[in-house]
Length: 194
Image 1: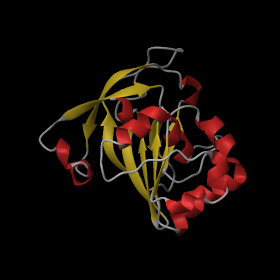
Image 2: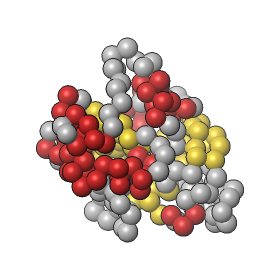
Image 3: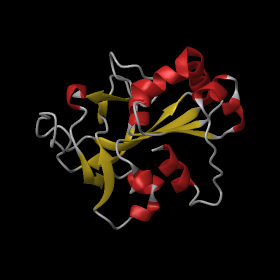
Image 4: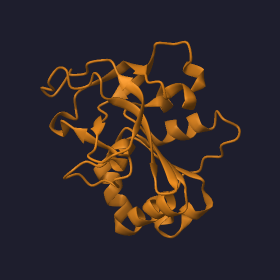
């Protein structure tokens, strides 16, 4: 997930991606960046790697300094407001049906909201798009959350682990939210590998 994210970011010549590990982040390495991308993998493991100091650094970066943060799949879990899950409480969304988080993978279809085209004008004139999905979070608005859905899951993913049908359609797939002075963007799928 990490190498795919870095290579995808390199497609834009205005973006200069660098890998920042948790130790560098905790020592202030985030200070030289405008945005942070939290890639896929294991959200709980990544939260543990950040530790308390790293988590505080990310929160300060977004809320006080006005930085941007993108959560891809496990990164979306990390930014969520999910009860009983180690997360940063920044995205305004919570993950549901975590007991079936290994629900399956593949190319999924998602549809748009009116706000989509303000952020992604390249989708104008299209009814839907496709993205690689690999057991990402099923996101719903968190109590008091102010996330703005930009994409809504249309595919019903319930291929593995006894996952129930009907949990993914209609759920936020892409969303953004303000957090203090900063911005948060989450995606349940893997845009970087699509």
